[in-house]
Image (cartoon, rainbow, N blue to C red; front, side, top):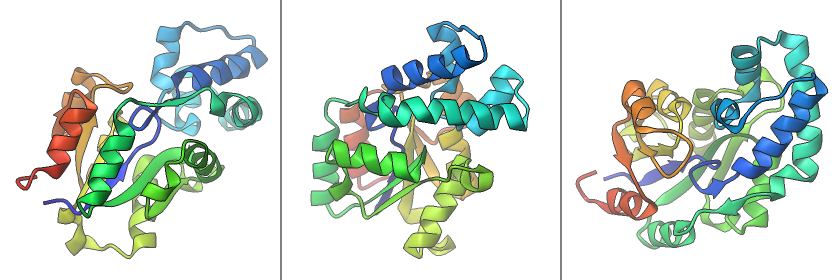
Length: 219
């Protein structure tokens, strides 16, 4: 049985795609670049510190400039073009009522994660909100998860009681690098092929499927 549930934010609890896409387009326009929705899809999930070099070929200075432009728009406008997935409040209520310890582990910077969780009244569900930093010191998902573990005082012997829930391969990689099993959700931004390639321990199609898995005594 898993007593601790670490949850990603974008694509797992909320559908932040519209706000992220509009902020990405503002960022790309700054550099004279245009991309389709399909071309923007890989940017959903991983940190821009990774995505800009990988998908745009940006160097460190260009990436730093791009992130500044993105955040200028996202923090004022894009962050609110977002919504909680149907069934999420019921999921969180049920998990809390069944004694689960809920922890946010998101690649979104701490400040942005706090704003989103406060705006949608998600904050009260969590014992800890773990996000990234604005620089590269804590930008990858495995670093965010390690940070949350440290802040909660959880060690290696506790890891068998923890499961990570996310919707992209970086969630799977981040959990496994910390010795934690992970469930990938198909209602978010990833896909079955991605999850199988990354080695997800569990895959759920819907929020209801996820609730049943997390409450299963056999987990």
